[in-house]
Length: 396
Image 1 (cartoon, one colour):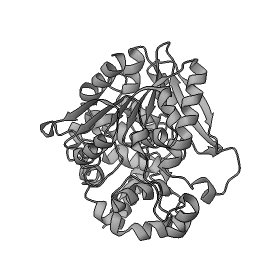
Image 2: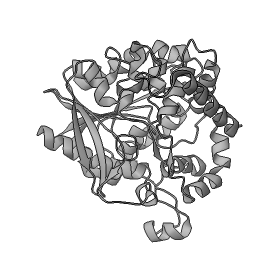
Image 3: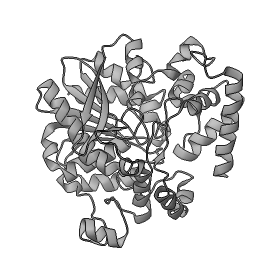
Image 4: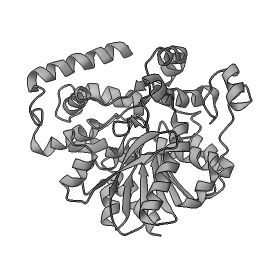
C-alpha cells in the first residue's frame, strides 16, 4: 500500500512537470505562491527584514548554516522538527510566522538548521556518504546545539539566550541539557512546543507498520539508504499542486498528512498558504535519526541509540543503551502540549513532566480545540494559539 502511494506520487509529479515544465521561473504558479521556491534568506528578504547567514562548525566537523534576523534585543534560537528546516518558522508569512513576529517584538532571532537538512549538508572533511550520515538526533543535541549556542553567545556578547523548540527541537534540547548539563546555565528559558521524549502512546496510523518493518529499515540503512525525508524540487511541485484547497486530487495530500500526522482538515491547517507550506517540507535528515525515534517506541523509553548488545557494550559498557538523564535539566521550562496531538501525546508529556525538575509553566490545549501536531508551527491558528503565548512568555 505504501509503495503504491509513493508510485502514484511519482506519476502525478511527472504529469505536472509535463503541464508546467521545469524551466519556468515559478513553474506555472502565480506570484502570490512564488514563495514555494524561496529559501530562508529569500523569504526573509521578501518581507524587508534584515538577514544574515552564519556558518557554524561543530566539534566533529559538520557545517551548519544558520540564519539571523538581527535586532538589539535578547537572542532567541528557534529549533525545527524532524526532517525540517529554518523555513518552518517563516512560511506562514510576515503576519503569522513566529520568526517575523519575534523580530517585530524586538528579539534577535536566530534560525537553527540541524546537520543533514538541506541547508547543513557540509563537512570539513571529504567523508563518504556512510560516514557523513552516521548520526541521529543525539549528535544534533550533543554537538550541533552546543556549537550553535556558543556561536550565538560569542557573536552577540551575551551570556544567555532563550530557546524555542518544536517536536524534535525539544528532543535535542533534552539531549543537550542532559548530556552536557553546563549548557543549562546558558539558556534563560526553554519554550518547548509539542515536546517529544518517550513516545509510548504515539497514535499515528502508520506506527504499527513502522515497528513491524523495523528490521527492514535497519537493513536498508546498512545497505546505503542514508538519507530520508529529503527535499527535492519534484516533491515541491507535487505538494504545491496536490496540497491545494482547489485541487481535484487534494485527497492525496489529506491521506499523506492524516496517516503521518493525524491531520484531517487541510483548510483548518493553513488555508490558502497550504501550497507554500507543504512545498517546504520535508527538508531531509538521516535514516539513523528515524530509526532512533522508532527505537523509542519499540523499547518504550528515551534512550541513546541501540546498536545491538555487542556494540552497545563497547560504546556504553552495557548491553542496553543508557537512558537520557532528564533530572540534570534545570533550565526553566515551559511546555505546551495538545490533547489532539497524535505524536506528542498528553499521556507521554505527563511522564515527561514527572521527570523534569524545573517546569515553570505548562499549557495543555483542550481537545475541543482539535489542535494537531503540525499546527504548532504550520497551522492557520498558530499565530493566535501559539505565537502570542510564546511572545508573552519571552517578554515576561
